[in-house]
Image 1 (tube, each protein chain N blue to C red):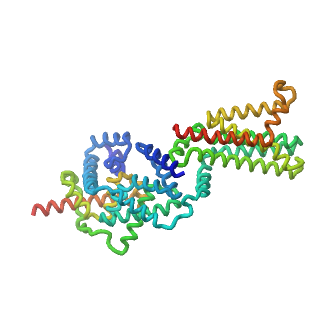
Image 2: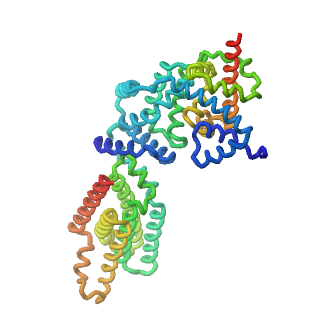
Image 3: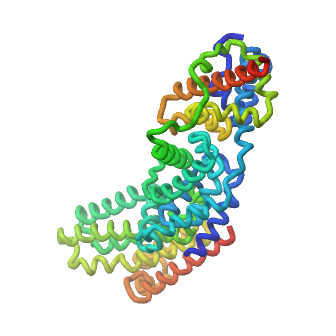
Length: 290
Length: 208
């Protein structure tokens, strides 16, 4: 047996201390059984370990009175502003969730919106048509990707933290929706500025209601079932809307009814709010069942 | 919100048992985030997880149980204040032990940490013969061994407690002490030599 095969000192110490994984420990054990030098060395360390543990065992563990004293000292401190400050707490959850939203989502959403603007500017297609089509779809696909074990490998750990699953879901929804709203607003402003749309208000109206309704509906289906279902239904509903505009494509679908559903009106906003409430309720139920 | 926190915290505590190292660290980090938000239950859980190890470590540093308990208290109060600034560069327990180390250093600044009988002569006892000492060490009673450990220097006890009582690997010890791994190795070896020397000297005392 050559010297280079001897167990490294840090490994040997860790093995004696019982700090190694079983497989690695077994490898060392096999070597030590057959190697006189390493066996003597291990025995020497083991004697040290015995002495250290014996002296540790001679002392009782700290009792609850130690913690009680700590809590008394903490209570005696002036109250911290962050203590129970709901806004700060919400902000910290929001910031904490940002890295957990799939990174591709941000770039992909922006890219689609930029392409939309380029298409409108270069081809003189009606801005309301293109943005009204793209903005709701981008938002709906985005929000259906924010929550669930399929799209978030870290969800298991997230759920082990005392922040409620509902708060996590709503924080991510807020992030993604705010981002998509901002994207669509920037795109609309750019188009209104270059004269591609008569008014900014009219342009925003063409996508705002549909965006909120389609994304909350897609979120509801995604948390209730699976993200794939949320995405599929959003795509399906949106295809019907697009094709209904193409005259005669769906004789059985009344284009006027479809347009009324996908508009910015009190009814669509109310429906979006209902979907959001249901999605929050479903997430809360799942959390208790987990 | 408080009731909800407690419910989830309870689940966190239940789930924590048997978690692999990385998941355990993740759940430690969640506790520190909660402490930063002012959650007392999270601090109590952090205490439940680390207090025994922490106390053992601080006793090793200062050699006095009553002082060590006071320092553990100081450490938890300091952790409560500093949780918001925890950056996650080190593991939570390394951070916690680091706070304890600073507290111990501040408190004992200007005086010798512990009365220690280990002098240079003992440290230089030849240690080529490994067998007999190791055997007699293993045979010695727990109280005798504890008395010997108490006579080591704080630096020696510190590395020995971390390695053999807490089960830390050398890399983590090096991170806590902010020294290279080679220094941890040499301190461990010097501590082993000193412990062995103490044992030999006592055996000679008995023979006289």
